[in-house]
Image 1 (tube, helix red, strand yellow):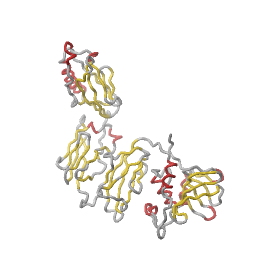
Image 2: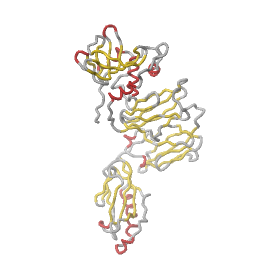
Image 3: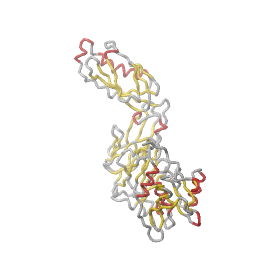
Image 4: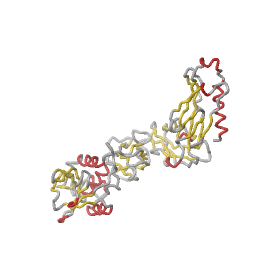
Length: 429
């Protein structure tokens, strides 16, 4: 937006303020509302606020709702961070608020966004949040755009960018950049019933934006389903978020992860949701992987090595000690760049060796959260280290006597080859 256009709005706003003369300034009632006036600034752009001749600078003061987005020095405002905030105008004489205006800050060059919602299917009377899939690249917030929808009888958009379905149908949502109408994008959203003819699973979280902090969990629900036993989940972006057996998504690092749920009967019945991960994890992952492993103690395999770990790995009815370790790591929100997804014990050992993270038993004292490998004397087995006390190492292992159980060994036990030492992210208590 050109500076002259911005100043025009500000002069209009402060002209109204200026109609109150100094002689009756104490009698002003804070009735002025300029909340619908918007000023669009680029980052680092500065604008001088004009002061009407009837008011000196010392007669008024300004306060900012979010000083991270914009700053004000006397009567000069400057765009800082991308987003929207409100600046309030008050009379110093009686500390009464007489007006406000909205400031939107965007990057110098705004890129076309990829518009989406966590799921592009919602049911009637349910809501979802609008979002940019590439928000870190756009250079503008949702507030920088004008929003329209093709049929408000099917769905509507609130002021805080929440879409609510009203009746079955498909709508197109349009977003156009206020400062440059050539930047525009559209998105289709389907409002349907739970028992829709497309057999689409309707996924949702308790957060309409489906946002989770890195290192924390958010649970995915399937609308109309009281149990998830007949479904399995998959993350298409394991380095951003993992997903466990009950749809518990663990944030790994900032980004957007595509998570899907499938019927165990047929992959043609499925649903998709996008989960946004923010922040930096501060988690004791060694402790977490042990906690998840402990929760599995007592699990017993079915006939012919039938286990949920093998089913999850898509290699059921096979030896499953390595798949157990992989499953536990995934449930703990540990990405495959830290602990590989492996079904072959020798391959898992080789992975740690190739990363420079394998320690042979004679030169190393294991730590909680390490991965133990038994390969000597004809053995081929793996598990998770829980602790070391004295000369003994304590573990949790799958496929040991056909179940998940705790074991312990002398550190010098001949069947132990060594330990994978995962490079867990640092954390602070």
